[in-house]
Structure formats: structure tokens, C-alpha cells
Length: 365
Ligand code: 0PR
Image (cartoon, rainbow, N blue to C red; front, side, top):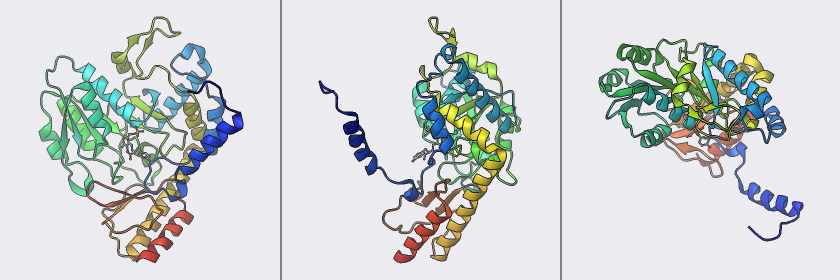
């Protein structure tokens, strides 16, 4: 830090320079985040400086968090779900598995059994919590092999997980089947719907994946992905809200005397933004956003296949994957662990963006 501060314009100009080096969304075809909705950005500013870590100081913002949790609980077919706004899928997954561990004390070498497709946040979780991570191989269509999952659980298993909207292929595990495995073996069952939670409910005939499914204990879903909120906004929901109590620590000098969240200071701005988007769009609005993304996903696949790129799988959601092939310069596309080209058709990947991309693909084929 320098001794003397700079003029405001200098600071803004310095930062604008850095910002201009960032890539533009209209060329990013592989991100699970998007340009936040305009109302989320306005509300974010209105609530900057709010801290959900000390709810007694911000009772208004705290009510908004409660309303967000309630709305998302309703969306997940369980209006009485408990929950809180996390920093994203990583924190939600970590906290869910922490709860599972607390609910089964006394296991010497605890393990969790997760699909091979599980996001790398489960590796971090297991590292932090001292758990063995058992990875179940893929079955059909890049979803988890449920027979193998059942075989891989044992008396030291504290939780199983299913993914509703896998990061790489956008597929949905057989949540009903995993729910039965969980119930038969008395296991905590966490559904990672960080991406899919704000997509699947708005598809025409979605497979059951949420609290509607017997055995599901917790769900993570992220407004900062398909919910179009500002970053960072995730949400962890529990079927039995009182289980959050297993994480409580005493906070004697705060306005609340106990806290179960991971972070202490927690932003309210993104949470208010997320709630604003939900209120503004309603289910109808989200259905239309998701329908647009699915339409653009289909157009991308049709366009790519016309150039000889072969789809890796028929996507259930707005993720498209293809056998490898070259990609025109200037576009950001990622590769899955199996080397497939991977696109995430987020709301910023509009029909025009898809057409511009396909026009560039035409030039290299
Ligand atoms: N669970 C699933 C199924 C996910 O896809 C992700 C992230 C997480 C958990 C973790 O969520 P947070 O990153 O919010 O903690 N999926 C994206 C990914 O790893 C995150 C992302 C988003 C990465 C935008 C890059 C990017 O540009 O690909």
C-alpha cells in the first residue's frame, strides 16, 4: 500500500484497464456462471454492506434470506426445508457432508460414496473432513452405476451423493434409485443440484430429483449459476432443518447466540439479488429462460453435427458435448476428462452467439 492515496478517476481508470483484459461473456461457451440479471445487479448495490453473519443487525436482509430459502424449498417440493445461503456449491457440499458426519459419530474410518462425475468440491470436502472418498464408476450415459454404488457402501459409510446436473455432461443420476439405497442402509443422501436445481424444475417432464424423492436428505442449488444472481450465491437445503443444529457453535457476543454456517461474515447483497430475480421472473419466467437455453443447445448440436462433430451424449440439460475436434480461435470451450468438447449454453449464450460461433466453425471446416 502506498503512503498517499490516488484520485478517484485514477483508481477507476486503473481498474477499468484490468477489467478490459477479462474475456467477454459472448465468447465464453463453457462457464456455468452467466451475466447476472439486471435486477440482481441493482439490488446488489442496494444491499452492499449488509452482513448476514450478524442477523440481529440486519433483520430485513435476514428475512430475505428466509424467503429465498422458502422459495427454493418450495421449488424442491418441500416448503418446510431448512437452509441458508452459502457461497456456492462447494460450501453447500462441504456443509452437507459435515452434517452427515456429525449425525454418525463414532465411525473410525468413515467414507462417502459418490459418483465418478462428482464435482471436485467433494475431494476438498473429504480432505478437510478426513473421509475416504469412494468413487462409483459411470454406468450408462455418464450417470452413476447404481448397482455398484450399492455394493460400495458398507458399515463405515456416512453418506451417499447423487448429481442432478453433472458438471461435465449435464446428466442426472437416478436419484430415486439412490434414495432407495440410502433408505435401505440408513444413509444420509445429499443431492448436488448446484447447476441443475434451477434448470430441472423448468424442463417439460423432469425426472424426480428433489425432496419429492424419499430418502433425499439435503440438496445444494446455486442461484449464481442458472439463477442469474450476482456471485457468490449458493443455497444448502435440508429436509430436516433441525439437523443444522449439529453444526452449531456458540457466538456469545453476537446478536444471535449460535451459528451453523461456515463463514462468519456473509454477504446479503447477492442473496437479495437472487431473491429479486426469483420474484421478478416467477416459475413462468424461469421456464422461458430454460426453454431458450434448451433451444439454443439443440441448435448448437444440430449445427455442430452438420460439420461432423458427433454428440457425446443426448443432453438432458443445457450442456452439449462432442467428440473432439478443433474450435475456432477466440472462443472459450472446455474439454471433459474424456476429451470431449464441452459447451454450457447459459442465458448469455444467445441464438446470435450460437450462430456467430457456428459461422466461425464453418471457416475452419
Ligand atoms: N457442484 C456442481 C455440480 C458444480 O457444477 C459445481 C461448479 C459445484 C458443485 C461447485 O460450485 P461452486 O463453484 O459454486 O463452489 N461447477 C462449475 C465448474 O466447476 C463452476 C464454474 C463456474 C467454473 C463458472 C468455471 C466457471 O467459469 O465448472
